[in-house]
Figure 1 (tube, rainbow, N blue to C red):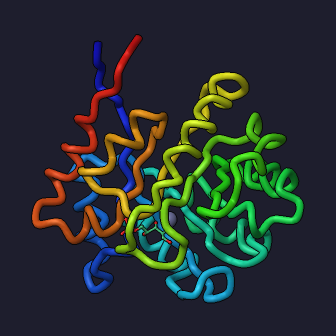
Figure 2: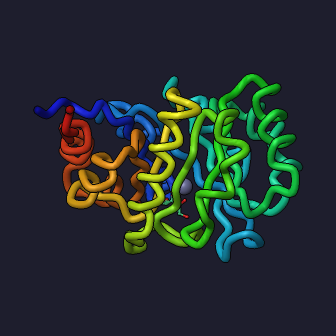
Length: 225
Ligand code: DX5
Ligand code: ZN
């Protein structure tokens, strides 16, 4: 038996054309995306600089979609408030950058938004053992963060399986997002092991038909037992 996966789709504006930000955000919305993913990079945690709260605030004025803010920045505690004030609905920090992850997650939630933690490809899922019940979202990186358009790293599949198992035991509402090198060809392999949100930059914004990309993501089926 198979059923529709109902996977959430989140285009990343990192791959959008910033000379026409409004229409690029609207394109995601019209294509049927659920979230718009904002990749914030500081040139410290990752070797690239993208944008800050000002762009997130501009995105907020273009759409009512959920703004999913991915902070790839050093010591993210310093800027959580600003990204919430800019209109983020969910804020994800990197485990590798948080000395007091529990406090950071508490703080994000106290700002009235959903809280997520991201893991680099080399970071073990076991780093989340103690915090998983408190999270709204885990974001598994399937590329080393910093750039769009990289190739999918396959160890993400085993990591999703482990998180999915833990989700069933301690946090059934947890969203498992996958980010990096996702396209309609490899998306079924992550959805079938438990990914519930697909983040896609180049596969969406560089596609000849971005609507078709969302349709393909949305039509992924998962086995039922
Ligand atoms: C990478 C970012 C991703 C990126 C994905 O550091 O976190 O969100 O935009 O881009 P693609 O889908 O092109 O790999
Ligand atoms: Zn991202």
